[in-house]
Length: 330
Image (spheres, rainbow, N blue to C red):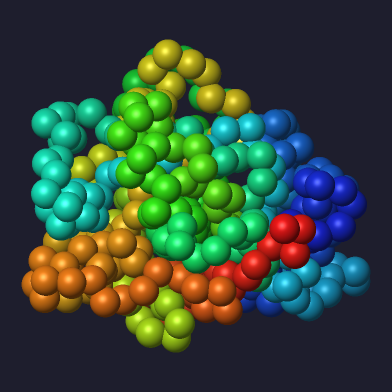
């Protein structure tokens, strides 16, 4: 099944069921008013959602309508929890090498993970707003995320995949000019991570077929900044930790509420010809090979586009396509 959220009906929007062509939808009021409601009562409600999806696919929903991406909010506009990992060593290793820092000694033994901004996710066509100037070093991080059901404390790795409900596309916005000082103080991110963006659609594991191997999701992930292709990546390759391992790690000492969003971190592949999933890594490569970083971080008016395709070239989650703009509330 494929879901989206229409920007109407309050802060959490209105749940939509979407057809497989990802061009038509129907309001899912007969099933659940919001995606969070569906996640909270998944076992009881998903069969009804599947029936609605089948009717939509067969043309049996007279109230179906054409999707307009700007009218969509993030699929989960507010989440109870957002946990983001760093599972792709070829991202972090290059950035750390460029600034003369070492990788954590236990990087390959225990996942790195932080708790991010979850009370607001930006929609796929909404601008990234900043109240101050571009000197913050505004960057993208191309990611795939999962949304879980209720996960018990201490779930074993071999059972963790069973708690994955949905997959989606994420731009984890990072303010590179603020992060080093925050990390240096030893208490993690706060101002260095603003609200992240979600792609328009989230999909159930069965919808992606063999691209999901029970551990990681494969596909062709395209990253554009200012119209330039900076990354053509496969998130199913070169990760040292997979989603079941990340879920098990996150739940070691706590339960995870239904609707928890878990990312695997900025994408990076061992084959450097595939490019980068963030500007910081691209700049680090320039620093190491040319002695200086040339590719600028996002400036006001700049646009980005992130999209993941299946082997036939069809979009999995729709595209995140947004601009950096000054916040008018300044």
